[in-house]
Structures are given as structure tokens and as C-alpha cells.
Image (spheres, rainbow over the protein chains, first blue to last red):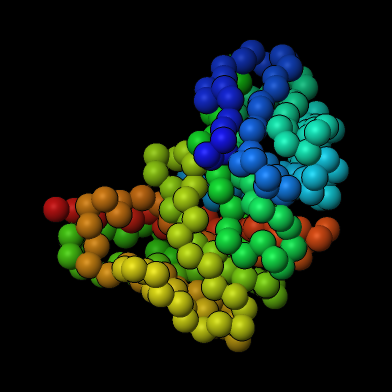
Length: 117
Length: 113
């Protein structure tokens, strides 16, 4: 597609439930990033994919968070046993490729606003 | 964790004035980027400056980078009401072969008519 698409745009879930957030990057972009942004803060890195593999998952806060990108395009961020503290906007971004050659910046999606009640 | 600190946290100016935002960071970088965000949703890439560059221009935007002081500034000239948004700096270091960005805390800019 023309841009990075994230679905759903809003998600309200009950504490303890499982949620999946989807990101459809720009076609041909091999690098995909997930960020989380709390109110009044800058985005915080969660995980980075280069192709199908997670090249850096150091930002995932705990083992309730997991992300996949099985075919190297669409990615799903999965959160188990959601907690109220997980409430935030989850942002996905893609870039043509990682490394020093990726100097055009990221293209971000509009994010998924997750609210855990 | 967030590497960058932006200053000021909030800035209110009149249309036509220039807006200057500053960013400080802590570690060595490959490049530094500035992004704009409206209404707390998707960020839009504005400009990128490499670690070996000192100044860069794009339209009404001017970015400087001082790697010895680990700081950058974003100048928006002749501001417009439509420039009202949050602005974030982000630094890129090599991490696992990628170009992972670490964002600052942002400056909220309000341009009044």
C-alpha cells in the first residue's frame, strides 16, 4: 500500500485478555519497527524486524509481549494477560532497509490506541 | 528508555515568528532525525542529518548538529498555525544491523494566529 497501515485504530480490552495488533508496512520495506507511546512521552522502542526475523527485541517489556512477521511483510504484536499499564498508543514503522543505508527515515502508521480497562 | 531530552517542553509563538527547539542526547550516533506528530498519532519524518554533517535545510526547516556537545536544534522559520504539533528528535545507532531510533521527550509547539 501507499503507507503503513495499522489495525485496529482503537482497541478497548478487559484486564487479563489477549490482544493482537496488526501492522501492514509499505510494500518492499524490509525493516519493520514497533514502538509504544504513553501520553506525553516520546515513542519507546519495542522490537525491530529485518525480513522475517526479529533482529532486536530488547525493548519488549516482558514475556507477555511477543511479535511475529512470518512472511516478511505484515507483522502482529501480541500481548497476553493485558494489564492497565499496557494502555498506550502502539506505533509501527517501516523503512526500506536497515543499517546505514536506511537514511530516509521511518514511515509510521497512525497507531493503535490500546486501552485496558 | 529515551535518549533525547528536548527543550523547551512547550513553546507558544505567534504566526510568522521563528520557532527553535533543541535536543540533547547521550551516546554516539549515526544520524539524528526530527519528526512531527499531530494529535498523538502517527509521526511524520521531517529531516535527517548525518553525524558528519553540521547543518541541513529543507524548506522552512533548518537543522544543526553539534556532535561534540551531543546536541541538535530544529528551526522553523516563518511559522504557520498549521505547524502546531509535537516535534521529536530521534537518534540512530547501529543495533543488530538495523537503524533503531531512540526518541526524545518532544516539544509541543503552538502557533497562534
